[in-house]
Image 1: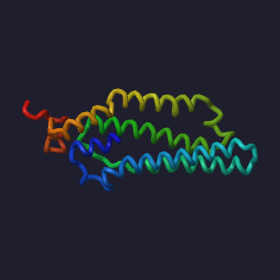
Image 2 (image 1 turned 120 degrees about the vertical axis):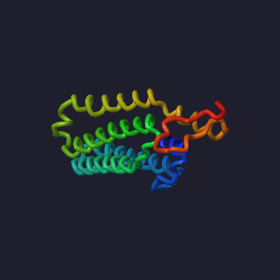
Image 3 (image 1 turned 90 degrees about the horizontal axis):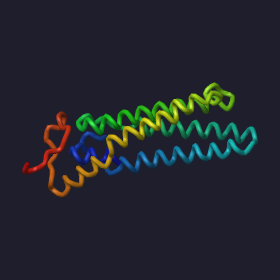
Length: 172
């Protein structure tokens, strides 16, 4: 949602490889599909049958790979530096977490990552804590507020996209 608002705010639709209105739908759809695959795989792993456990592990890995692929589809828009940098940081953190989760499930229940609790703290909890902290500091509501103000005619986006790091108040 924040990426779509940033694109709207800077009139950057021409820089996208897909329509802005489809951004959230595509990424949320990919996340939901990924979570369904992971959840289904987790359910199968809990059945206790070896064949179901193996199929469940494969589904979890496929779900995690789907998440990695959808996450890798983001487009670079360097004009809105502060919020874009926060999206880059969060994307890298979630990407790293997803890669570790893929390796974790590929190794199986007896794998090194699954057998060492520190990996869960470092590559899951800590990465997500940092991501949430970055989003709390660079809150997407700031972008939404600027977009609403621009739509109401109270602000104007700087026309020099490469140098645009803020919106100018009109008449001030």
